[in-house]
Length: 508
Image (tube, rainbow, N blue to C red; front, side, top):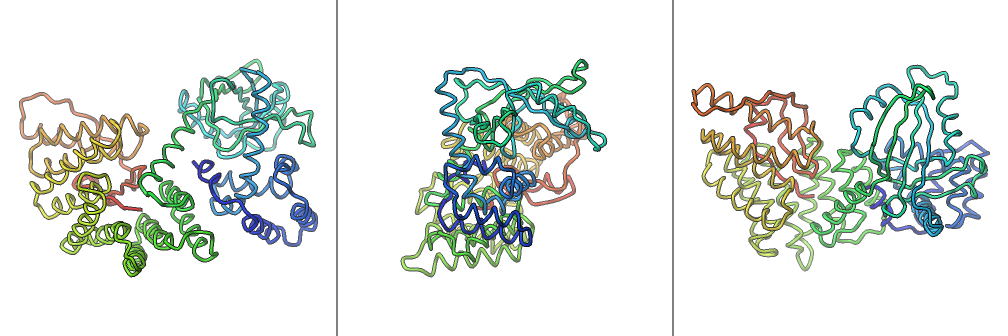
């Protein structure tokens, strides 16, 4: 996802200067690197990106460290060079494709810690995505040499990756022969672009070679997921710039502190964002604080965003519904239900006026209103709102979508509170079935829903229900419950508290 977003960010002289100034400060006092930085500043051209990357100097070191540690702030600073490097790899990949090769076998040898190897084994047949530019070789023997060379590190294993790439069938996996640009041409290096995705075919110990052999196959599936994320956000946010989608991605990834640094840099450094984006940035900063659990800070930024939208001519009424909903959510979580409900209803009126009653934006606020009515014990009204939400979602969303699963869950909660255990069980099961199609098997929401089903079964058994019901085992619940699409649940470490809460929607 990072690649799809970063490639759309502006690449200009200002971004180049920002990168150079960072490097000069980072390497202050290191005359060797400072001399290379000056050379880069004076002579660099876009078509020299691969050559500069293979020098293994200041650019190689910082970019790979930032990718390895997922330092989004630094990666944003280096967007100027990352964009060039990705573009040059695409150019070289096209040359490779024109040669007519169909299947390319590549290799990578390295040392791997026991825990990492164990994790890969557990994900056999699943997808794995690189978090950087992946260096490989056409030479299997050279890769084996790298894997088996002596090391002072303890508890590590020699690993050989064998990577099959079908150039004719994969469209998004970009890799290129870069030996011609490298000072180490005999290594026959092939470099994969950011975000390359592979299917883990098998992991076996090769006793003859005395190493672990991990067979991978290049796959387009990861790229499709990333593109769907960006396009979904573009569709939902309408005019929202790619810069803001990038920041929202950080929030969705749970990197709240990184997102705050990023948004503040947009505001303080006068990055090229439209004036109307200032209000949106404040709303997203509020979302980041909200996700961190800092309700007071969140409220401060939501209210500022709302003021910026409502106190301009003409008023940005349509946009104002987002921070308005989020202000309501803060008061909701503070237990001030009357105040929250008034804000939700006001936001709903705006959404219905601007988008219509049957629209996904309207549905999100209807969800929060339903949750209010659940909290105050007006269960029939809550059901009316949730059933309306479900009708809208089933009309406009794909057949399997996490938001539909969350609505099933909310309906189940209400029926449980009404002691209609048969219906509660039915809707929890609907929610679980859909979550299992969309989320990893150990995801918090799957665990929570399974526990809810187990508790319903226990209650039905205690009431001596004659209909046989299979009791499901209870599963542990992690401390934080939050789904992958920024549908935030009220945090709780107690299962009983979790199962009685309906899910709320933060509007980024």
